[in-house]
Every structure is written in C-alpha cells, then in structure tokens.
Image (cartoon, rainbow, N blue to C red):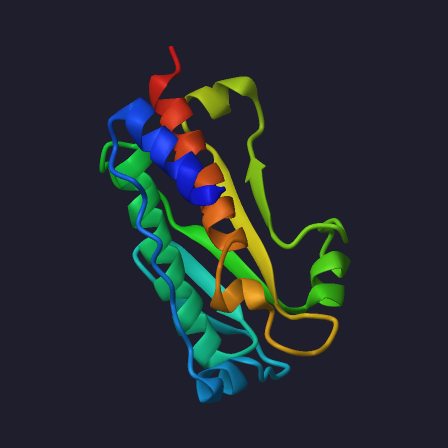
Amino acid sequence: DVAMADAKIAAATGAAAPRRDRFDLTAEEVKELSTSDAHWHEEETKHFKVRTHNPALTKFIGKQAEHYLTLLCERFLGGAAYPRKVPLTVFRDHNEYVGAGFPAWSGGGTITDYQSLDSFISGKVDASIALFQLGTDRKLNPELSEPVVLPHELTHLALTRGTLDRAP
C-alpha cells in the first residue's frame, strides 16, 4: 500500500509524507492534449527544455516537471535547486519512443550520459528524460494525466544529484 509505505518513510526519515498532487484534466483538456502534429513544439522552463508534438502538452508537461522536481528536491536534496536544464522529450507515440532507442517494455526513460568516473563524480553529468504522448489505442497516455512515470524519472535526477553532492 502506497500510503503505508509513505508513512513508514516519513517516520523513518522525519520527513513529512509526500503530497499526492494531481493535475486533474477535463475531458476537453484530455482531447486537446491528445492531438499531435508533425512539428516539434519546444518551451523552456526553469529546469527543463520540453519538446512535444502539441503546444498545449508542452506547457502542461513543463508545469508538471517543475512541480514534481521541486517536491523531490525538497525531499531528497534539502530544498537545494537542481543545477541544470534537462531535455524532456515527449514522443508522439510508443512506436516513435521505441524507434528513438528506448526499450519497448518501458513507459519512460532517463538517460544519464557521462564520459568517465571523474566526470560523474565532479557533477558534469548530462541527463535527459523521454516519455510518449499516445498509447497504442491512440488515446492520451494516462501516465501524462495521472503521472507516475514522470515523477519516477525525475527521482533519478534528484537522487543522482544527491549522490554526486556526497561523493568524496
């Protein structure tokens, strides 16, 4: 049970239980976010360079990513800000996502690229996140409206940053 696990983590760490924030969407908003076109739409937020095939989705994902990264940095980094801009790409559909090299079994991915152990330890690590917009049924991927995968992928960023800050 997620609530029980959260309570145990909070009790063990002395941290407050995480907020279960949602981005509730109306049926009309889901319909708008389910469309895509041939062009990439890009928008930068404080910590992300978001790319999707739908301008409304680009804004929506940017808002979600900033929200969840802030919560994760509060929880795992003592409120420290994440130090880089991260490319966050939402591919049109699962086929495009897999065609870009991500495993077919995954719902999202974080790629951390570093050239050597020294670059990893020094914090010179670039990361990017990938998701997909439409499921095989051509409907909006439910992970975008009731996100689990995006917060999970952002956890990789926060924990990697926390690990680098503690490296000798």
